[in-house]
Length: 324
Image 1 (tube, rainbow, N blue to C red):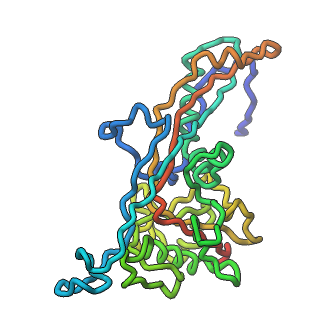
Image 2: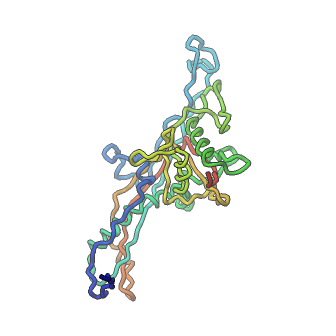
Image 3: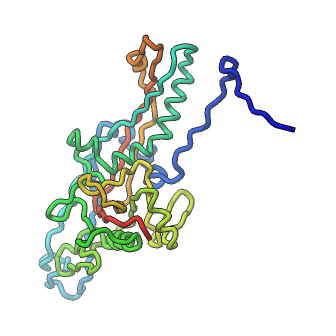
């Protein structure tokens, strides 16, 4: 018996719910540390801007408890250098926005708003990832926060490029360099008596930080093929338990927004990213301004403030080949 398939007459189509939105299962928002509004005294006002004094990133020293005069002693008069407070981190949040265009015929404001809110929530992670990587808004507005693809300055900051002069390294080597950078991240001992440099990365040996490695999703098969990453719940972890973030909103540009070499990609390592998200809301009255009477369409706008930041103790980059 033959089976035939025919299309329904459009005018007789029954409205049904569209396929549900499915945001990426692995994303920055799932991996980042999120602020707890119940414990945050500024939960209602942080979208206007906030600041914090990060924990010190200085390497503790080994000292001779019986000798109070050596250069590495932390006792008064021991000759140790004065500890300098870490620089305050200031941050100006940005807004993630989504417009849902709809026809004015059969107007159902509640449905429009629900669709706009669902789309905003589903796409928030990608939008936040893009701003964290590129700093597009921060650069345009002159905001004080940092972003991943900041330019490399002559003194080695704010982002340290670990790519050797010979060019992009193999994916295994790239991951190793970033893991070593995370393990040594921070400042050397304050007295200078125990200053040491890692021979692999060329960076001072600090106390180290657990952190995140930011990459394009196309890096995952290369590392997985060598057993370098594993999945645990909502996290992708390396052998050192660093969190791998394959952001769908990451564009893959290098420091200063540079384009990677053909067949190569940029990776970044940071200390733990913290994210703040405002509850999504509908912008009242905006849809009236977006009314297009010539075609009878309007747009409902949903928005939320967002922030993605870290303590700046870790900021490394490396360019890798996209072949095993």
